[in-house]
Each structure stands twice: as C-alpha cells, then as structure tokens.
Image: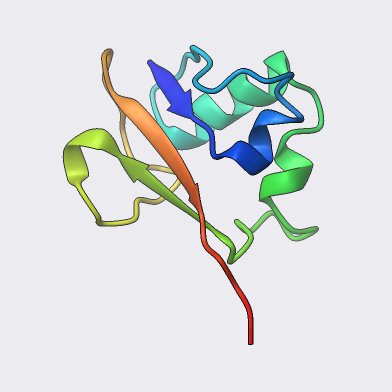
Length: 88
C-alpha cells in the first residue's frame, strides 16, 4: 500500500510523494514510513504521540471521513495525509 504525502512532508521524505509501506493498521504503516524516512513522524505527531491538528489521515475508500491509527488497511489501499491550512 502507499501513503500519499502532502507537499510539506515530501521534504523529509526526500521528495517521494507516495512511498510504499507495509502494515495491518494505519499506525503500523506510519511506523513503516518512519523506518524508511527516520524523523518523519516528528513532523506528524506531538510529544505525547498525538497527531498534530494540522493533519488529517484518510483512506481512499473512506472518502472524507478521517480515520484513526488503529484502522485496519488492506493491500491496495492508499493512506492519504492532508495538511490543513491554519490561520487567524
């Protein structure tokens, strides 16, 4: 399966837009992503291990509903990480 990264995360991934990962859950897939690109999780999670509010994680098959890290994934799924524009 693949993780589609937003442009802001393509720098720590060395310019890779959609790396292949392995895992049975979204969390395991993000661990696989971290193994390929050490330090990328520092851009996604706070010190308590919670996803930063500027990101949402989605599965291609689930449309616009955000998913949790324990969501099961299957071969062929694409995990999409979107970053939200924040401002005031």
